[in-house]
Image (cartoon, rainbow, N blue to C red; front, side, top):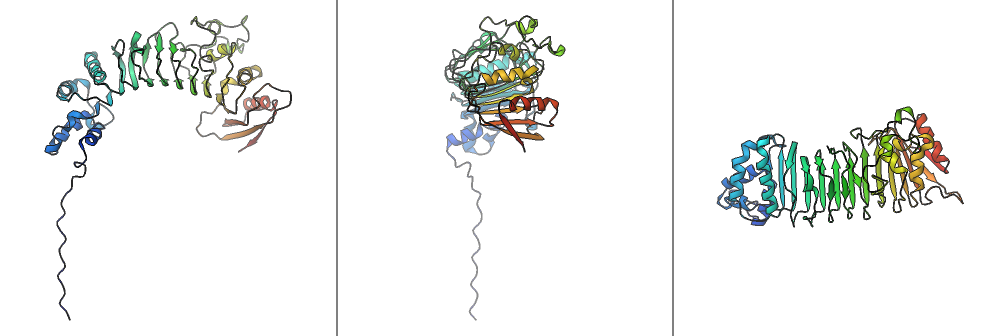
Length: 406
């Protein structure tokens, strides 16, 4: 029997630094996702990492989201000041400044850090705070800024005039106090305003002719006046209880059907620029979601001068549009939507899951042009088919729309 051959022992495992083998520009990008404090600490990993943090493509100055870095502005002042001095003078792709707590004494530092970001040609700037921090960039000037995301910020006067930001395409404002009489931009394509409020006694004018998408929800104060947006593709507008424009006649069921009986809220425009506050500006959209609490006067007033939605393909409405004698608001908007293809009614149910969903089919009647002959999908979603829903179904059936339950 031949002697067994000795098995060769496996070579010792040697640790391989695969991340460290990446080229510098990729490591700069990776480090940009870390909070600034953590990015700087990587200088301790190895000789090669000693200065990488100085040239990251992103800068995150944060005091929330991650409990390991839950600190206040005051605790980071010296650190950030030294960081900005020691950084290489490279351009920044992204800058995030997020804090849940700050004081009035912190405001100069926050504004200084924002100015540093703008001077570093930042392309995407995010400022999320919990309070009414006043942004003092007056006005904002940047040839490179493409995305601006603001939350918990007080915006004054010409800060929202973006004439000096020709590359800006995306603007998001959440829970902000807007004390500017105008939001204007020639380059902006996407605008989101949610949970914001205005202390002004007049409407904020939104002048963005190149806008492609709009989301305006839960605005407190006078509803903003939307100027014409001919390139608009889709819009979502929700008038919540935060609005101070309740119809004074609503609860007496006198719904301001004509100007002789209309209340002061429904009659007043206070914009001196046209009859419609919202509908005129978004009348070129292809896809619309229009939601409102029951007593709001803005849409009611707009419907008195309802524009024609010449491009509208899909429309989602809630019960506000059906809760009136003869379902007048719904009838009006259908009459003025000549190419509508899909109508969705979400009645007394916010979803996303509805207990009852009905699909309808429309068969145009010869000689009848009351609604779009292109309408091929009608959906009604609710939690229960009560008397209010039945009235809406009867109204739709009058236009030869037949339903089936799912």
